[in-house]
Length: 332
Ligand code: RIB
Ligand code: CA
Image (cartoon, rainbow, N blue to C red; front, side, top):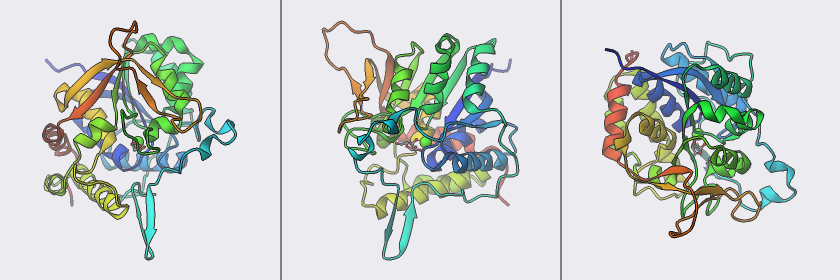
C-alpha cells in the first residue's frame, strides 16, 4: 500500500540553500505540497518568488507559489534597533570581483509559471484552517509569514502537525555574534512561533554547520546526471566559493541550512543529537536582538516548547540528497 503523504506548506526565501530544500521536498515524493509561500530575506520578496518559480518549473511540478510579506512585522519600527549590529554579509567585492551567497537569478532557465494572486499569509491561514488533516510547515526564511498567520488566527496552531524550521543558533551566530539570520531578521515572528503551542522542531546553525557539504559531495551530486543534482551541485560550489572569498570558516564544509530541515522532516536519522528545550527569542533590540535563548538550567520549572537539533550527520544527509535528487528530469 502506498505510504500516505504528509500535507506540507514550505515557507522560503529562495536563495541558494532554499532552492536545494525545495528540490528535496518535491522530489522526495513524501509530501503533498499544498503550496510554497515566499518571504523576503535573502533578497527582496519579488526576487525570492521568481527564484522559487524557477525551481518549481525546473522539475515541471504543479505547486502553487504565493508571495508573502516584503519585510519584518515590526522590527524596523524601533528607532536605532537595526543599527545595533553590522548588516548580515552575504556578498563581497574584492579587486573588482563580486561573489554572492545567493544569486539574484538561479543558473537554470527563467520561470514560465506565475505566482498566485492570493497573499501567502491568507493562503496559510485558510489552508490550515480548512484542512481535514493536520498540516506540516517547513519555514526556511525570516519567520514573518508564519508569525503573521499565527497572529491573524492563533487557532490554526491546533491544526499544525509540526513546524520544522531552519533558524536560530546556540552559542554562535551569523547575522550577529549571537543571532542567526532567519530569527535576526524578524525576532517577533520567531517568538510568536515558539509561543504558539504548535509542535516545533528547530534546525539551528549548530546542526547545519556540523553537516556541511564538501567539494566531493558537490561532485557526487553533479554525477547524478539530473537537473536537480546539477543545480544542487552548482549551488553548493557557489556557496563554498563565496564562503572562502569572504574569509569564513570552511573546515566543516559548506552548510546547506534549509535542505537539512527538509531532510530532518523526511528522516530522523539525519540528526545525531537533539534535545527538548525551552526556547525564547530576545526581541529587545539590543546587541542580542534576535538571539534564540535556550534555557539549559535543570531543576527549574519550565515546559520545553521545541526539539532542538544540535548535530547533523553529513554522510546521512548526502545519502538522502542523492536518493531523491537522482529523480526528475535528466540533464541534456
Ligand atoms: O542562516 C541561514 C538562513 O539564512 C538560511 O535559511 C539562508 O537561506 C538564509 O536565509
Ligand atoms: Ca532561507
